[in-house]
Length: 83
Image (cartoon, rainbow, N blue to C red; front, side, top):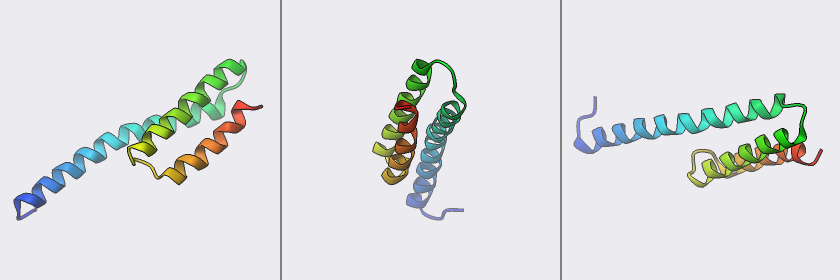
């Protein structure tokens, strides 16, 4: 249990950030799975790849994921764009 007002506030902020981040990370994981299993029409694959790369960029900008993590994943997703 936090003893000081600042510690209580810090705990609350940390919990709120974790909750917001979990939604973004879940979306990234879902898009990654969609990209891996997507087959067929190249327009659909391209659209999913673009959406995935965009989500990674937004998460890196908000520092939910590290920029190097985002860059590694984007480079892997680029393979689906140019095949």
